[in-house]
Image (cartoon, rainbow, N blue to C red; front, side, top):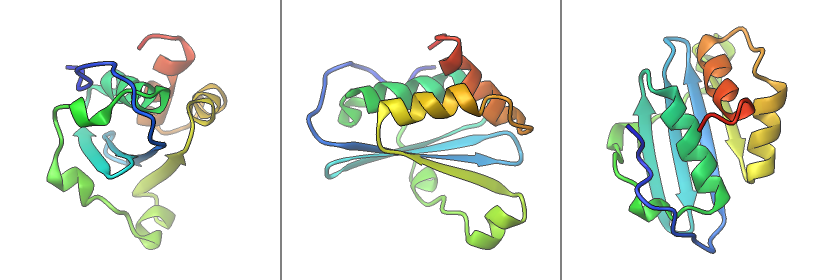
Length: 124
């Protein structure tokens, strides 16, 4: 299920934090001006890829459904990242996100491979 309801565009800068966990899930945290939105994707990584792409393209995240408080609270510590529990990436532009997806889709982490492959193949 896609969470982006509309493609109205917003002028505020969007920042996307994508947190991959070693259980195969992905937490997406978006910030656009004063508006924050976060969601945990256990299995629908195509929606995760598309939601990040749409937000960085300029979609108004205030119109997204599926905002989850627990996803806002996801903030892995340095030790959790160093011990292999999480991989965390932050994107400030659509080109930065697309570059990551084109260059890092061969990762050994299955969830990173899956999410980035949707963007790399244009299957959003």
